[in-house]
Image (cartoon, rainbow, N blue to C red; front, side, top):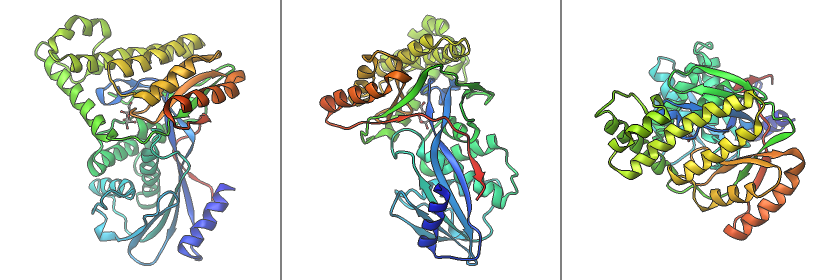
Length: 390
Ligand code: GLA
């Protein structure tokens, strides 16, 4: 049904033609634990969501690419030989960045196409709408212009480079990897240093993951994100006066506590403590899930949020309020912010029987304390990027 409607909108946007319209899809993600560890060579534990970005594609005669989106007004037509130019401040930089990274690997767009993007991930919610735009572009180009030459892991890395080099956000690999490699009802336990991963079944016996959106506009999120990365690099530089580390992910917590004083600046020390302790929480949480110990998993989620609030300082009043109110509800065994922070969403582990109460009571309290209305979604864990039968 969705596809039929999208095709109708495609024809309204570009007009009808006898050429077929192909459809690709890539999901958003929610990270369950392991936050701000990916760019430190640590572990993460995200899963792909059933909502994401659809991309409709049709061949045309002229040597241009037409870009349109159902989520943004901006649309444009760019000649094939001008695709490495940026369009200041516009969403098309995500697909253009991916096209540019393909070009660097020797894969060029050789024929004109019309593209329509349509996403149902709440924008700016920290559920990786940008990675889903990048990865859906990645699988489309790989299929249409490269005969599926690149594997999915390679594509995830290429899409990360697009965001780093073209968009200018120094993100880690987690979002693009989750969007590419996700599997229905599984979370991905990923070692971001080696890219070894394991798909872990999400058996939550009677519990559900509830995502709560602060609906707070994320201000300065990209610059604060890059600032945190810089602080982690500084921590490594100080520790390397006595060690020889590539990244903070190589340290265990006990080892870190013994040498933390080598980092003179207290803020930088706190940032490093978050990364090292979060890495251990992520490892422990995956083990707890495998042991069916959901209470322990929930406690580790709580510990993750507290560390992101106190040591990494990326939460803020809205995220903290949602988490505090969630934890007051009977039937909630864990609640934390997810994604980069500075606004965006929380994820909570909630007894199925308490979900309605959760939404009403947390929603009301959040509105009283912040003046904002939260949105709630019960997470439906879906598959990674793929071409759809159209
Ligand atoms: C953003 C980035 C990811 C990761 C998270 C924090 O989502 O894109 O690479 O660093 O923040 O865990």
